Image (cartoon, rainbow, N blue to C red; front, side, top):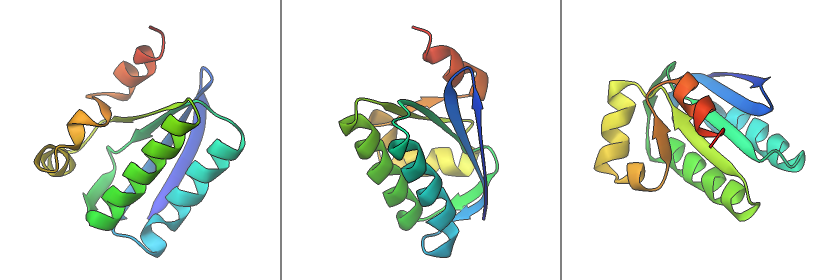
Length: 113
């Protein structure tokens, strides 16, 4: 798994590519999210458009960091879910926990209001 991280208009965007299966697959994602927490970043979007698959370990990483950002007064939002990932999130009822946007642009605009 490769994880691209960049910033746009003061919002951090994390873009994992590949599979989120735990262990080394999620290690880089975990590190980048902890680094943002350490910098007191309050606005983060995880763009899942290039994430092929996710198992329970991948879901656990997302939930863990959603809670960490929430506890710190920040927001971690998801964008651009593939159909496979969207199905997983719906079945697990995680669309009631995460703020999910169809596109990265929608997620970016959601921080304006």
